[in-house]
Image 1 (tube, rainbow, N blue to C red):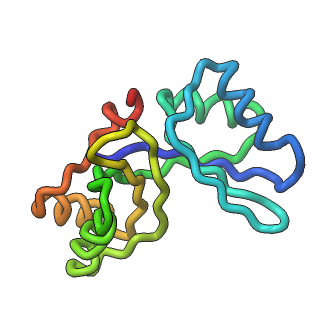
Image 2 (image 1 turned 90 degrees about the horizontal axis):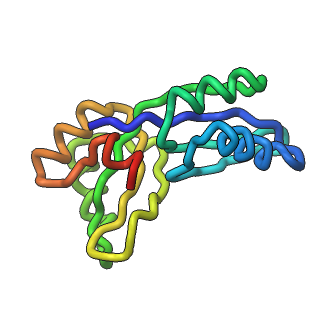
Length: 143
């Protein structure tokens, strides 16, 4: 029930983000979700892509520093308190959210949020025990 995410460390200068997306596109890799956090000197671009191994390989061949991380994709009710209800489940089990970002799937009843936890396995167990739909990577990569 884990999803592979790649994190790319990029210099905070004009054109680097465009270069990453060009390299991935030319390799036939589709970006499904992303998050970008930056400082004055560098950024961390986190991506969910349809071909994680290909993305990792092509980016490293172009000199980028790339890491793979396990994250969790969770269906969250698309209504007021939807996210709060999920976070309450995690909080009551003392599962810490390190970071999260949204994943746009479609309009409808649920949104998808990508979570990074300090205890990934524990979070998956707690969420599934409470009836929360944790998505398999295969479903996320091709949404």
